[in-house]
Amino acid sequence: MCLALIGGMDRLERHYRNEAEKFGIDLKVFNTSAAGIASKVKNADAVVIFTNKISHRAMKKVMCIARSKNIPIFRYHACGVCTLRDCLNCLHKKGGVWNG
Image (cartoon, rainbow, N blue to C red; front, side, top):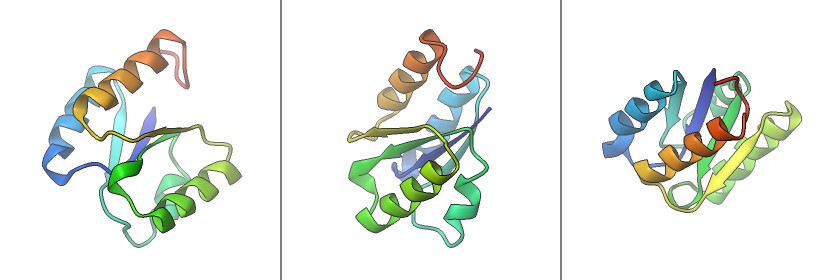
């Protein structure tokens, strides 16, 4: 399972990855609007967007690509590790996008 995290804080990237590893998730973190982000997102199984740490332009671009590829999108305003943990827990309990 590959999850793309768009936004977030640079200093928390290691913690985001640690949380994802607990669920057996390969997490790709994009803190900035990197060149070629669309090609990287289209290979993900799901996309999590932290809306308070990303530009509107980048968010729209990612959402457009994800929708065109039928990739589930999860948007959260907060960008803390607890927010990601809650997202992963919720998906796991509901049988979300992977067979956890």
